[in-house]
Image 1 (tube, rainbow, N blue to C red):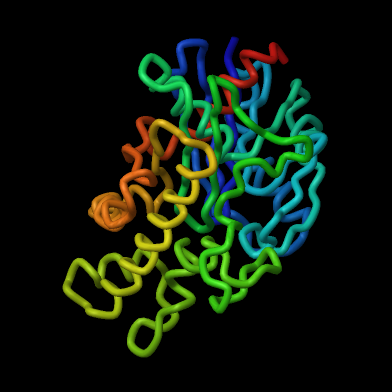
Image 2: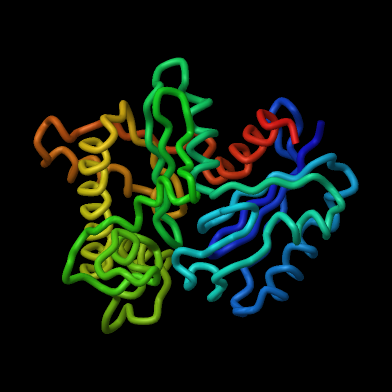
Length: 291
């Protein structure tokens, strides 16, 4: 059975046809609409999937935010253009006319990465550092989603009680500091107004402020990983996302984690499926649920 997989992120929307062997075909991307209306997201999704839908028999969605009863509830509305609630599965099912399921994107990615590692690990945590910071937890071979879909939202744990306000309404979340949006928001002077990609480029050219901002992000993520190890006793942590997979970033996190007491250290791995982990994880879950 061919699955139409959709990944909804704060910066981009992606879709592909995925076969039973998890091979991706006809992958497409569009920018996530900046408009705060549900109509804008619906229109973008319709445009994204139109060339693919006729070849699929079901739809599997990985989306930023909390997925509860098929609805998208953005824990940080700034990451999805201000949307607080969106009937995700209902909307996509109407667009495609196909059976549809949805899961949080980091939870989906965690499940895909677990499948790549399950011969070695039964307990693992996935962290994505991108527009926001998300996570997924696999414990004893089971993906934890929680009764309300909140499980794994590790980017909204506390990093600095005096830190910047997070879009979720808390002050000093990991996401507000370590994410691409957080890196950009902290930029001053000559870097003010630039996005995280540009700041990484400037760091590569030796810009002192850019280097400092990226180190701040990596240090914040390393402290989160130490907390995650203490909470879950996971066997490894897998890092993904556009920031997490940027050149040199994982090494910075490893260096900072090495400064923590030995009990809180854990092996770090780059995401095996890179930027397609969410798409593939959603497909795996759809296969298991036989939608």
